[in-house]
Image (cartoon, rainbow, N blue to C red; front, side, top):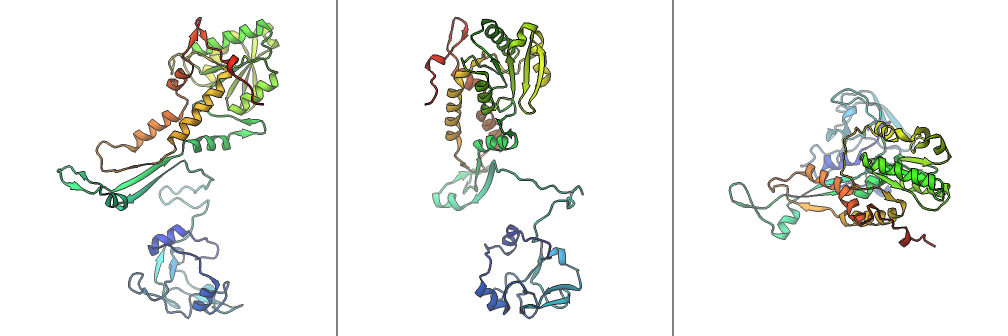
Length: 369
C-alpha cells in the first residue's frame, strides 16, 4: 500500500476469498525476521498464484502502485528502509488488486465529480443467503416449467426505529428536536397560553378546526398548564410548527413558530390557513381524509401505540427471490406507510366522538409521579 493510503479490509477479504486477521507479533517476526514498522517485500519467496501456491505467503500490491518505480519501503531490518524499489523488478507480487479505502475529494469513476464522505446510519440491509437454509430445510418450489428446484434465499431488514433516530440526530438543539412533517406525530400544535381565558380558548379551537378542515394534521394543547411547559412538551414530541394564541388575539393576530429555525411570525387569524398552505406547500385540496384535530392528552396513547407498531415490525423476513410477482420496492412502500403516523391509525385512536366534538381524554390522563 502507499504510505498515505488505508487498507479496506472488505476488499482484502474479497480478493483472497477468505476472512483475514492482523498478524501477531510472533508471526511477523517468523516471516519477516523484523519487528513491525520496517516490513518490506524484499527477501521473501512469495506465492505466484493465489489459488495454486497455498503453502507460500501471498503478496498483494495495491493497484495505485502498479507501474510505479523508485519507491521506498521497509528493509525487513530494524531502523532500516530501502529506496529505489520497483514492483516487478526488485520483487514479484502475487497479484495487483484494488485494496485501498477511497478518500474524500477523489474523482468518481463514472461522472468525475469529487467524492463526498459523510457519517451515515444503516436503516436497512439485504443479505444473499444462497442455498444454506433452503437446502437444510428441504425447501422446494416449482420453476416456470413446473420443475421442482431449490430456491436461492435472501433476507432483508428495515429498521423503522432507526429512521426516527436518524431524523432526530440531524434535527435537534438544546431544547429538543423537530421532525419533518411527513413523519412527525402532528404537523401543527395550537397552543393557547391561558385556557382559563375563554377568548383565547375559543380562538384556539376555531384555528384548530380551520386548519383541520384544510387538511392539516393538528393537535390542540388545551391543558391547564403554564405556556413554558406546553412549549417544552411540543419540543420534545418533535412537532415542526406551533401556533401560539396569546395576548395578540386582541389585535387579530397569533404567533406562528417554525421549530427548525425558531423563527416567529405574526399572522392574522383570518390568514392562518393560507400561511400554512405556503409553509407546507399544500394547496387547497386535502391530501388526507378529515380526521378531526386532537387534544394534547392523546399524544401519550399515540406514542405508546407507535412503540407497539415498531416492536412488532422489527423482525427481518426471509423470502425466496424466485417467487413470482415479488417486489422489494413494494414492500418498502408498504412498510414506510405502516411506519408513518397514518390516517388509518389515527382514526382508530380518536374515532369516538360526542356532540360532534373531538373526544377529550384529559380526565383519564395523569401525569407520571
